[in-house]
Length: 533
Image 1 (tube, rainbow, N blue to C red):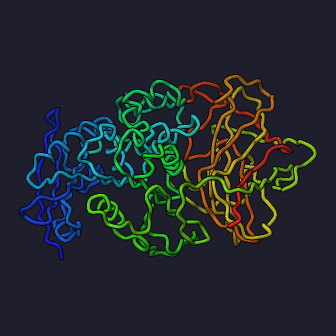
Image 2: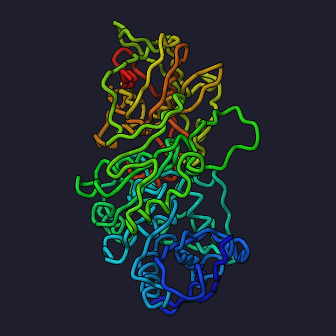
């Protein structure tokens, strides 16, 4: 059994704030490669026995409580100080007797983001990084097509602000339905928080705000702007899945050669422990890293440090799990499969492979004060895959169902929906959700949201317009007898900010209008991509 030496200390940052730092050493004397972790979720009490008995594979492990969390001093304002605090910790590590000249970065979710904050400085002693389930692009974390992700960033940022301080925190998910959303922090905290308020009023990714430090400019495209080998990881139902695929696909060829990526079938907990309670949801076999690739982080580090052979993964490639086929595959990327399969939306609320000759309208009332709810955040919000309500469960959820599929087919890539639509309002929202119906249960797969005026700024009520939805990357086996279900609506709470049916920045509107929205069948379709495999 390991007998690690555990030390506790406070490390002073450049502004004098002291951050609590734990040190695990394989032995009392010697120099070691150092793994650096920075964590805002640590418990205040140190579990010395667990730390002493943890197998660190010969590495010294540094775990620092992020500013204003657990035992660290200062004020926690998400992202604000992570770059300078992280660089200061690295400088401290370099002065320690146990430092052997090699640093490795380990994180997950926000614990990865704290490292992304300074990777563009390219410290030469950082030899490799293992950074699962985090997108480096701040806009993607907060927004999807101009819609604030209330079910992801919203409640999280409110819980993290001044985390260690005894302050008012008047927050539930319905809080984000307040109009106007701008100014809400003074009602939540009894004080205005400019760092949070600023995020509400920049729904356009082209806004200059996203090129400032407050908008995450230090993180922007950082995985391409550094030379450090990175092992990425996500799950097909991870909150950041699509952004992480974008990070991978946008890597320059030379960068990609020294990186790798793992995609499990799970959610933000991309490598969950074995299930211990019954569930109606599928539990994918042979899918957990603890089963197929134990100690994956250490193996990644040892490959670059000692030349150890990589187990299970390959540099320059993605290893992904195909849902329901229950198999792992390793490829350069996960593009759309070669064969298109198109399902047209019909007036009788079916999906058919034959395009209807006539275009007809399905109209419904969209009331922003009584928005439609859905279950599971799929790959854009927390909640992952969930079983959906019955089709057409509300007047403002229009469900289209296919005939049972005639054969098994592996489908991969980014599925698409082309929606012809119109509205009585000067702007409105349309939302699309794809589910797989099997054995009577509708399993949520993918979703997307957009507004009429996001790309074309002016809209004349009653005019037909086309919205193109793109679903996040996926690989799954559709089986003979499965049914595809496409839900179209104009809201998705508690996951996305409610649209007010008015043009402009939604967070600034103090009221909403009720609209009459229409789906125009005929040319509207769902497109999926199938493989010959």
